[in-house]
Amino acid sequence: LRLMASSSNALMDAFGPAAEAAMTHSTSSVDMNDVFSLRKPKDVQSGISSGLSSIGKSIGLGLAGLIAAPVIGAREGGVSGFVKGVGLGLASAVTLPVVGVSVGAVQIVRGVANTPEAVQAAFDGKSWDKKTRSWYSHSLREDAVTLGETSDEEIFARAQKRAEARGTKAGMEGLFSDGAFDGGDGAGGAKRRVKETEYYDALEVGTDASAGEIKRSYYLLARKLHPDKNPGDPEANARFQKIGEAYQVLSDATLRKKYDAQGREALGDAHTFINPSAFFSMLFGSDAFEGYIGRLKLATLAQAGTDLTSDEIDLLQRRREARLAIKLAAMLDVYADLGSAPSGAEPRAMDDKARAEAFLSTLKPMVDTLADKSFGLVLLKKIGWMYEKEAEKFLNDPVAGAGTWLDLGLRSTGVSMQQRTSTLQTKFAALKAGVNVFTTVQSSENDVANAKSEEEAAELRAKQQKDILPHVLDALWNASALDIDSTTRHVCNKLLHDTSVSMARRVLRGKGLYLLGKMFQEATSSNEAETDSMQTFEDALRAAFAPKDAADDEAPRCDR
Image (cartoon, rainbow, N blue to C red; front, side, top):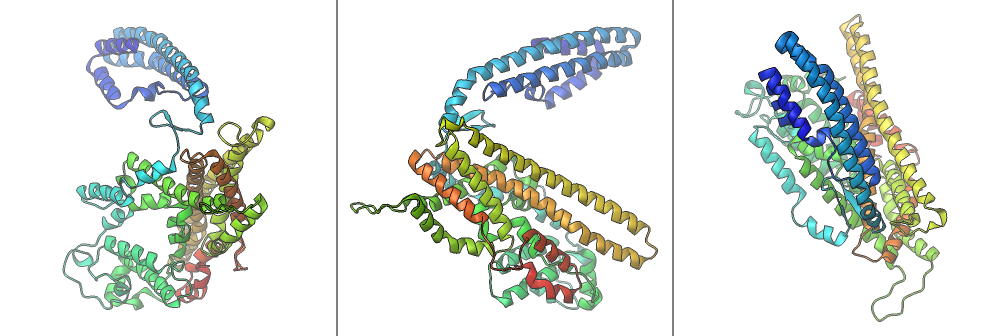
């Protein structure tokens, strides 16, 4: 590092203010860890990776200096500057790799030195914190105490205050409130005279409501009236459809002007209204599954967006995982406690088969209910697969779990490889969906540009919306699937390595988790027509873009 500093000083002395300004800017904005990996390595593998990374970066920087220094020298000092630049370039080409090799060697040695601690931590079931670079144990008892130190609402409130300090609102609400109507078109003034107030009344807002107020009211009412929360209530379902129709008009500045001036007649009979059920379930998850997946990261971003700091985002995710782990542990402890008896009573003998049958029969009504919810089967199979694999990995892991060395740890390693493969496939699917969105937009835009009339162009734009939506849905679903996978994996890791209970209870939790995962995956819906929830969801989206009468006919399919 001293050699690097000396080279920097020499460069500034040789090339004057321009080089000094460049060096000052770079040193003020670049952390040394961005150049060389100086963080504590977890083990020898991490140390080797860190060391090779530092060596590679130093060689690249040295070559860059060899090329850049003569160019800067010639620009600042002509021929003599060029000669000086060549000298400094050669010096950097030698100095930086030497520094990189030295840092790399140190990181490798540190990794080797930290390996015994890593091995012991693995046997103890500890996890590695990448931020603090330290090992930590899982304890659901401690997590329960930590949850009481603050609340998600307080965290979001801080983000909201930061947004208000900038004169806007947090998350998606800020995007819409920035476009609030002013003067004759907007909020903040006296209530305007409009031809009819049906849509305003449906959303329970005044005619002078801003776009942000309309958005907020719609979300609140949609949560309250969502069909999943009101099964068998046709009135609630009708109101849910109505607020979706109202929101489609009042959230669009052009449509709102037409509606205010002439009422619904100005919108035309063929105006397309989107049923919001699919979007709502996609972004926020069914409320019935909140105890299994919590608040999706997409929902967190929608609520607060970039107004949350990275530490707050991490804290929200840790709190989410802790809540889910505590709830799941309580469910699995039912399996663990089957056959036990109150203090002083004789425990009832129960073998594994009888215990499993009693446990699954207790949960079957709950699973059947979940399967009939919107997106139910898709979520059950996704969550169930993760439960099964995490339980299988723990029960066969000879290091941190309950397995033996008879299979040399191959079964546990094989499960980990299956999980990595699944994650890569989901990432690829999300990328593919994004590419499909782009190509579909490009193709349809070309068709619109070549349209022979405005009517034909309008038809092509409507077709574009219907063609793009399934790809957008696919991309968002895969993003949510990655979030669910990661969260579920961490939740299972917490409860299976919970140091506040005995290993015997953790083993029973693992067995119960495996049974629960299998049961989730084998679930079926009482609605025989729903064989593919994703396809049904896409069909519902397509139907939502039909004219109003057709949308009403298809409405029941959207909430199956």
